[in-house]
Image (cartoon, rainbow, N blue to C red; front, side):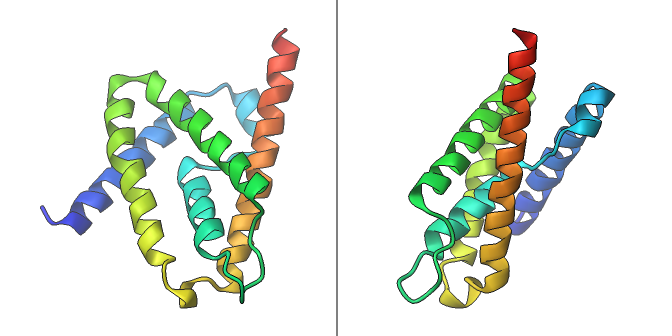
Length: 141
């Protein structure tokens, strides 16, 4: 199997697994809470790092990149703890996804306004998700 096919197969498997996980979530929680994927957060992080060049407008600050790192770590850990299959999938897909985005955004042409906007929008979604998780944790206590 070629590398591209392996990547596509891994991403498809991840998407199916994430969809199955989302489908089993409580309907009230799922309907009222904003969502963003680990993959989107990884992409936003890579864009923020690769596109922070002196001649381009700043995408995200170091503190904002730290927020993305925290989200990625927490959500990836939660995903991996759900099952052994998720753990194997996560160990395979997320590093490859990061490498692919790293390669994609290593050229200055890729760091356009659309990419920077996507990174900022994803950060806003991450903040909403984190606030919702914090609120639910407070309600449980």
